Image 1 (spheres, rainbow, N blue to C red):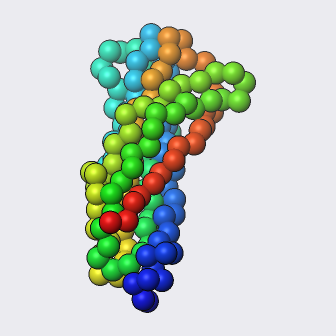
Image 2 (image 1 turned 180 degrees about the horizontal axis):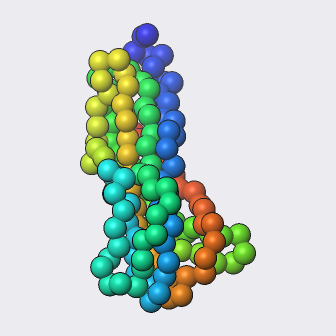
Length: 138
């Protein structure tokens, strides 16, 4: 594949959604999913983890061999349940951190984790939202 073609056709594709699983809010707090897909609370006891599917966000990148790229970390956003309730999703982190390099085949993987701010009380429901994932080729 020519360098010109792949530079103009680099593709970032979602492979796994960022999911926080099931939890209950007793007095508010935070739930964090790391770039490794590990879930934790802030330790205050206000949020209890209860199972469900927990995954970090994973994106595949396809471009030119050995291209370097910088990562634009998503801005804070808000998840909503469709009936007026919301939870801020903040403090996005990425792996790799800051920048990455595609392999000799032009392939790469980008992972994100983030933190939910859970209210006291947080109404139960299925919350969803969007955020912008962006890489900048060097």
